[in-house]
Length: 500
Image 1 (cartoon, rainbow, N blue to C red):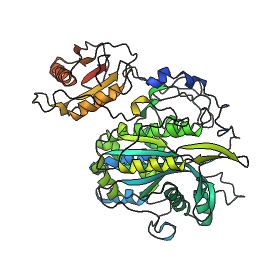
Image 2: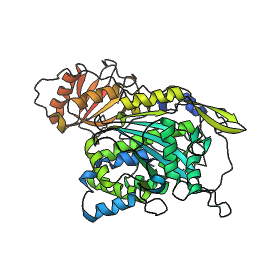
Image 3: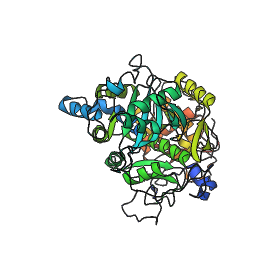
């Protein structure tokens, strides 16, 4: 929360006055206000009897990406050994050998250190701890495929609905989330390898690594960061199964508890689990950006918390190598998708049926680096505009010219004040190419700006504002005089003169 004063179901999560950014979708998506837990798609989400259970929610993408800067803070001595050991220890405290037993021949390492690779991110509902039911070992509650392309500093997230109807090796057809349970019933510790084999077969890909996460540890990590700034795309109201608080649309800081609620909520949405998947991807993008821009002590704390809550075959040297190659990754460099699918009932049980042709075509495009545009079907879920990759960028009109401004010394915030989707990100991308440091990118309070303003607070920064105006080829340089609140050195508010 952005405030320490809160009461269950009684107040909005507050957005910071000093930022004055809101989601374009948040302000204009009137359909979001119609969401109800009683409405569902094909009966896919239904109210269920609430039972006490121990959950593990996967948000491993953020953890994996968040660890990418650890090289500067953790690759030394005993500390490295301790962390390395914890990463290879499962959530029950058992040390694992990933080359023998059930794990033998499960993972395929990338062909070279710089080669792209796939990671399976999973969270497991650990069951109801029923001593009278030894087969209740839990199911994988969340599955996300992560593609990491180190050479191009890009990533892709693909959510797999837990009810997807697939072939589980050795067991036949069932929901994909049953693979973990069946593997654990076969032998303790067999859940992860069977889940990995199942997803690998389903997507027809080689999986190099996996990350399994415990949600209590995630909450600790988020609180250790002082919260995570997220542009919440739709209201979460009355979903008591996810948490005790209402979360409203808008750009705001979520503490550990609210972050979990944001990622768990599904009964309040018309499309249920699909919006939950979209929320998880949104959160992971925001978490990755925040951690990747943190100072070394913060990253060190994050790593320590991560090692306590994660079970993974990624060891410390691998994380260090990835860190060095992925520094500077931005949230809009992470492309997000879901498995193309429909829902159906078979024997009164709800299943998700994958469109194999479209899914494998998506996998092929992601593997080739030709990322397709975001999906726009009925199950895409609502995501913040500013989290969507935009391939266009404005031209740098001073490209190649000598300038007295050392662009790398300055942080530029950019806000969309004209309503053109992607305009703020486009300008921010161009200025980043010109060498400027990327600041906050979002929306102005209203889309009422006819002219683009390049705003400075300190008179010494006026030449920097002039430099940006020349690079854009339009706009007006303006002194803030305390009228605009921004955290960077320069604020650019995009007007109707925007040239995309």
